[in-house]
Length: 255
Ligand SMILES: [Zn+2]
Image (tube, rainbow, N blue to C red):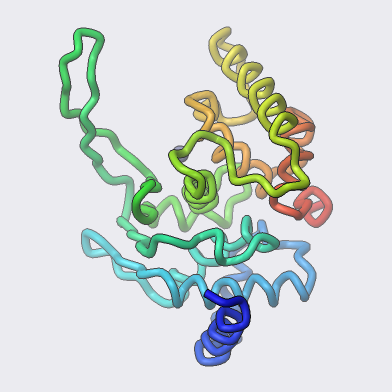
């Protein structure tokens, strides 16, 4: 789409779908991870949230009712990582499906003898390469607790990762970030964490990050936005690359 048509379209969506001021204040107050954002950043976040809510279909499953404020709570967290990247980073898919709580997902897993088994897992969230995002509402609503865990950021970071194919921990990088720097830095940090987990050490960063490269970027991005100084202390180069990729520094604003 031509840039000017897109700008015009976005402007008219934002103008025609204003967020009620009281709803805005109420939902922002529920999200301590937004503390320290400047007025300019908050108004950009508001603009992105309007576009996000307009473009995505929010669907409650298993009787989950979704109010406008619940959609806004999800949208504000989803749009924080793309505050300086733009709504276009969430292009190509539309569903945000919300379950009341952890949901069962069936998978086919092939064992060491080559036999496929149907297994069921309890999941809090999922992001699909060819589709949308699934969230458990009870965990989504925990966003008021700053503990380095943020389900919404986790799942939407998977969507950013999937923009250039399968989730593999490698985002589409802008020209000013060196692919070599990114690959070496993340490989080193991932190896360090998996080593610590294998040795049975306690790790300040959730050991789920040691599952694979995709989970490593999803989990460490949660920490970047919620407990930035922890990530800075544990993996300073990962922290530095996130400030360059997300083009923001939560350690400065949350200090
Ligand atoms: Zn994940």
